[in-house]
Image 1 (cartoon, rainbow, N blue to C red):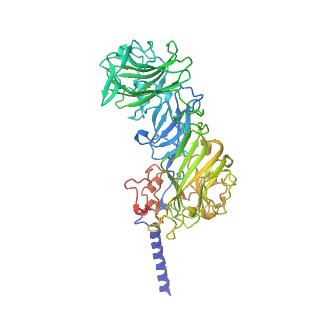
Image 2: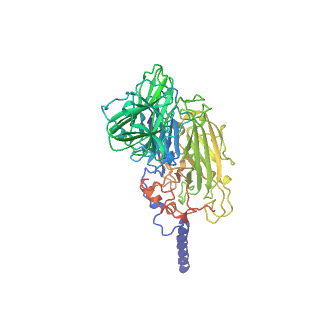
Image 3: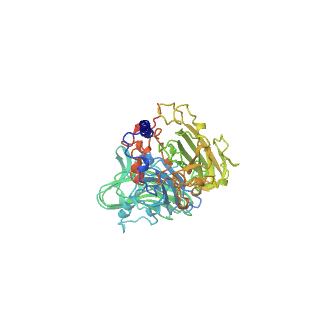
Length: 626
C-alpha cells in the first residue's frame, strides 16, 4: 500500500512539473511574473501624456481666427505622422494634452507662425501627466523698423538661442495663393532703389537697395536658381517687393534661408504695411538665425492695420562677409473661411460645416493601438495577455474651438485566448447625457441594458458597450483554446467594428477624456465583473465587493485598482499593433525586455513591444498564418 501511495505522489509531482512547463511554454525560464519587483506607482503605461502650450505671434489679430496647430512625431518631410491637431484661442494661445508613445523624445509642431521641434527628453513626472512644454513664437518677432548702418546689438546670440531644437533641414511648402512674383528667383529681373523706405509700386518686381547694388542677385545653387547676397566686408541692405493688401488682411510671409562663411551676419524678414500715400504704418519682423549651412524655413505673419493699401516684403541683412541665400519666398493672404468657424479653408477638414473643423486620430490616422486583457480577475492570470486582444483607432471630430462633436471608434477583435464569454466596452469622461446616440455596437445577450441613446443605462459617465460577447465576432473554429492563440489551429480572420458616437452638444476634449479612454472587459457575462487597465477606475455598474478578493489588491481609498499585491496588472495598452504571446506563454518569455521595462518603471526599454533585434522570442509569439 505504501509503495502505491509513493508511486501516486511521484506521478502527481511529475505531472505538476510537466503542466508548469507546458503552461509556460518556456525553456529555462529566468523569471516568472511573480518574481518581478514592480514599484507601487508604475501603471504599465507604454504612453505618456504631454501638455503642449504654444503662444502664437502678437502681430496677428485672433478675434475671428482659430489658428491651427498640428503636432507630428517628426517632420512630415521625413515621414512624420500627425499626432494631434487643434486651434489656438482668440488670444493666440494653444494648450492641449495628448498621449504619445513613451519612447518618443521630441515632437514637431507646425503653426501659422512656422515650425518648431520640441524636446520631450528632460521632463519630470507629476503623477501620470508630464510637465508642460511651451514655445513662444513672439520671442522671435519684433516691431522696430529696419536698422540702417551697424545695428546697436547683433541678433546673433538671440537667433542662435531661438534656433536650438529646430530641424536641421526643412524648406517651405508651396501655398495656393502666393502674392509674391518670382519668389523662386528663376527670373533674373531686379530693379534698384535708394533705401528700403523709398517709394514703391505694386509691379511684381524685386528691388535691391543701394548699399547692396552689385552684391545681390540671381545665383545657381546646385542647379537651383536662388537669391545670393555676397560681400567680403561690411554691407547692409535689403531685397524688397511691394504686394497688394488691405486693412484686416492676415498676411503670412515664408522664405527659405541659408548662409556660408563664419563672418558675422544679422538677418531679418519684414512685413511693412503702407498706406495709400506709401508711408509705413507698422513694422513686423522675424529674426533669422543667421548661421545656417542648410536650408531652413522661416515665417512672419501679421494682421494688416487700418488704412493699409499695400504691404512691403523686405529681406533685410547686415553682412560682414560670406554669403546669404534666399529661396521660395511666399506671401499668402487674406485667408478664406467659407463656413465662418474661424478656421482657414485650406486648414479646415470640413470647410463648409461650421460645426466641424478637424479630425484627431489616435494613435494616428494609419495605425492601430492594442488592448490586451487577462480575464481571470480577481484570480491569478496566466500572463499571456491574449484572453482578449483588441486593436483600436479613434477619430475625434472637433470644432474650431477644440470641442468634441463626434467620435468614430474602430476596433479589430484579433484574438480570444479564453473560454469565458467576455464583453468589451469603454467609458468616456463626459456624462452619459452628453451622448445623443451610439451605433455600430453588438448586443446579443440580455445582461446589458442600453439607454435611449444606446449608451449603457445607469452609468454616471458615458459608457459604450462595443460587444457583449466577443465570440459573436470571432467565432470559435472548433479546435484549440479560444481563437487565434493556439498555433496549428484554424485561423479566424479578425473582425472590424466601427462605433459612431454623436454628442448632444460639443464637449471640451479635457472633459471628454483622452483615447483610448477607460477600456474594460466584462468577464463571462457577469456585469459587475469588470477588468480595467491598472489604476483605471471601475464604472458605476462594477461590483465593488470583488475588490480585495483573491489576488486583487485594489484599494479605492488610495486610488489603487486592478493590481495584485505585486503590482501586476490584468490589462495592458500599447500604442501600436501588439504581437501577442501564444496560449500559456508568459509575456516575459515572448517579449524579452518586458521585465526590464516593468522593473525600471518604464525608464528602460520603453519600446519593449517593437520588433527590434533581440527583443523577441518568436516561438512564443502567435504567428498569423500566411
